[in-house]
Length: 238
Image (cartoon, rainbow, N blue to C red):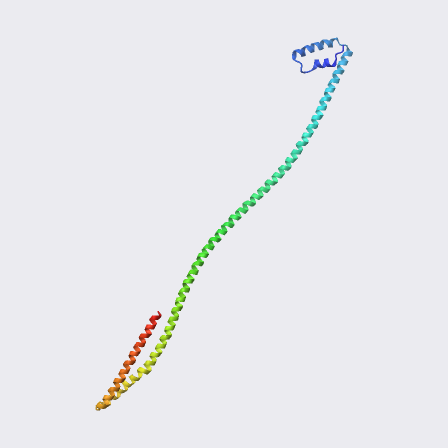
């Protein structure tokens, strides 16, 4: 008895329910009992062909799956290589960023140091300007004082010259105008005793003595006036 492949497949398909499977197995067992050896060979060959076809299908599916897996593995390897390159690039960029950050830190410290130095220099310049202004003010004050002292010195020099000139005039008056009357008075006093008994000569001598005394008095007044005027010139220079 020959069982068709479709019927055999229907009897052996895995989606059958439990009751149907029991029924099909019982039927198959009953049929197998009735089969001849040639029928069994035919069924076995069909089963073997079916299994080979299923194996080929599974092999083809496995081949496709392997190709897909190989493709996916290659893609994964590409992605892994790209990730490695990206990681290397990222690590390089991070190192560059760290270098730049370190350089920026150093640059900021240098900038802070330079700013502090500039502030120090500015403070020093301010102090120097204040000191310079003070020194300039002191120099101006000293210049004013020196100018005033120079003017005073010029006045004093002029006064001293005039004073020396006045002393010279005083010496001239003393040695010429005053000395003559004094000499006359001394000479008269020396000879007046010789004319005590001669009233006429005595009167003449007294007259000369009076004239010399009057002349001496005039010269003394002139000298006093001159000294006073000289003192007044000195005071007016002050």
